[in-house]
Image (cartoon, rainbow, N blue to C red; front, side):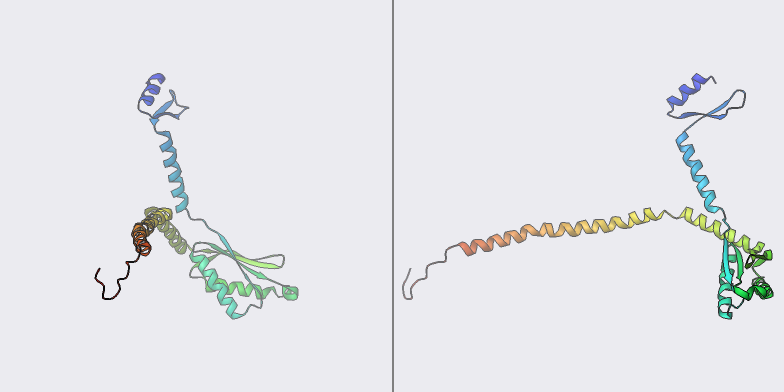
Length: 218
């Protein structure tokens, strides 16, 4: 189709003439609603990003002399991070002369890896960095797959449910109507109260009838 004919057809239909393949010979164009096309592309990109699993690196710090209670608390946190699909960097911080007993840090990291072996694998074994000894744990394939499925399910649920702003607006409409009716009710009652007050004032301003002496016939 000639270019002029294509432009004329797109104008008559209220659409846009968009060049799809500029390098083709001849170039390929398409008649479409370009604004709607861009909106749909943006919506698809947003949905794909929502369904994408983003892995974070969470840091958990321990000491060579960490008490059992604190150790259990840190291990539970690490397990939660792993089950959510994130990686965990377990750090042993040495202070003062503790640096001379590096084997204590290695033993603690080995205990952490054993306690989490059902959900995590050691991605990077223990290594020193200054006064810090650390290792990196990652979810095992089964846990990682489960975390991805949870993210996709949450994204699908968010797609099906209406946005919070729409729910809030629909909830506010009945409340606004009830408030308007409440305001209109006293306004309707006000004239009756005014009329009653006027009647009372008229009765008060009317002259009292003259009293008739006893034994006198009017």
